Image (cartoon, rainbow, N blue to C red; front, side):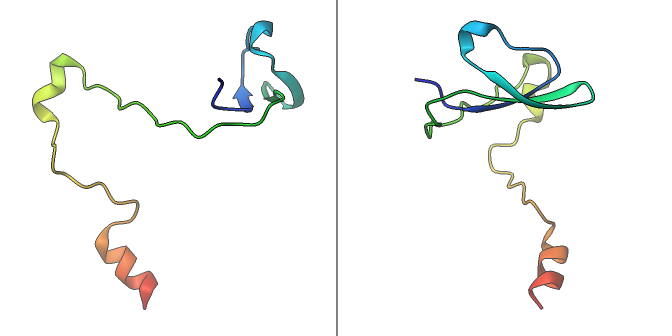
Length: 74
C-alpha cells in the first residue's frame, strides 16, 4: 500500500506508480494519485561507515535552539 498520494518532482515518475501531473511551475511539477495516503513509519537513515563514529545516540536536535525558543515563549 503506498504511503504518499502527492509528489513534487523535476523528473516524471514511472506511469505504473499512478501519479497524474496536477500543475507545473517552471521545471518543477506536482502530481497526485488516487487512494489517499497512509501513515507509515519512516525508516531511519543509516550513517555511512566512514562517519559512523560521529553519530551521537544521545544528541537531541531541536528545531529551534533553546535560546530562540525561550524568546518566542515570552
